[in-house]
Length: 307
Image (cartoon, rainbow, N blue to C red; front, side, top):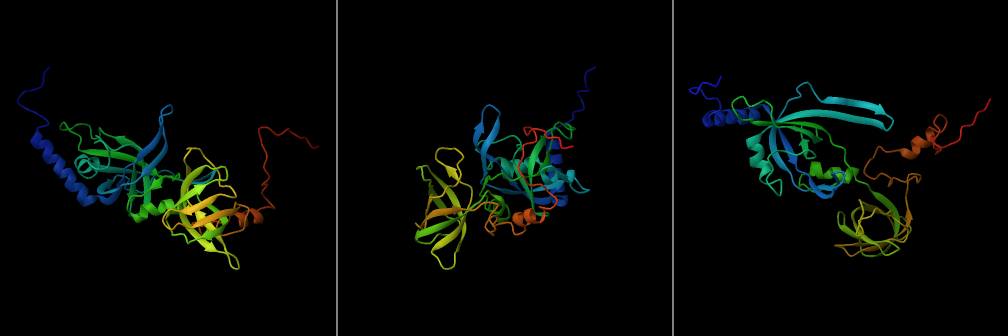
């Protein structure tokens, strides 16, 4: 039986009024967040995943935290890989506000909705969450329009992405957790500047660049303990730092040559320069009596029976 033509659900005036009420409610009951769009630099066209991505913009916007009882998900647990934190949270954001503050500026092409892989920074808990799922049809068209996006997010796991959003609380994540390399170098001339770009030349002539993080002078010598950020090479291949590699500051012009590469077995504070509580060498030495740290292959070692 057809609907009654004298009663209409979803008039433009009703939809606009409802949307305005939703925006006002989120401004009252919501919290300030920072939306960080993801920019995919290189995509795997076969597996359809990002090989390299970066975050170079951010937009403040208010959202409502639907998880009123606290973070959801698996929480904190110990796995075979150590302590893992799988906190989840559900945000609700107005479609109108999202298009006004993010959709028009956060993407090269205007996007109809937030995208999975984008980040949301929650200043209240200083947490950075990654969008895992975007619900576009909830509540389900009560008056012909969905006024909100419901974003299911999980705590973000940093994987050496470039972060240059302009917000220190977000950009400092790269400095604190990026893959860093520490080495001892002979300083040939000049003085490096913190945060400048370095031009790298490996002994076999391969060139690349990295970010200079810090250095310490070695007392009684002209050598330096140097820490640099993630390295990228012109060949787009993964390469390890090698003895004899030359580093030149892009701004300062300073030049240094690596003479020793530090690893986890070296007792030096430069192993994890940005993580003060990291004590891997100490843990390994103290646990020798009850943990077997020898490298074995449980799937390929022959079984030995000792009666």
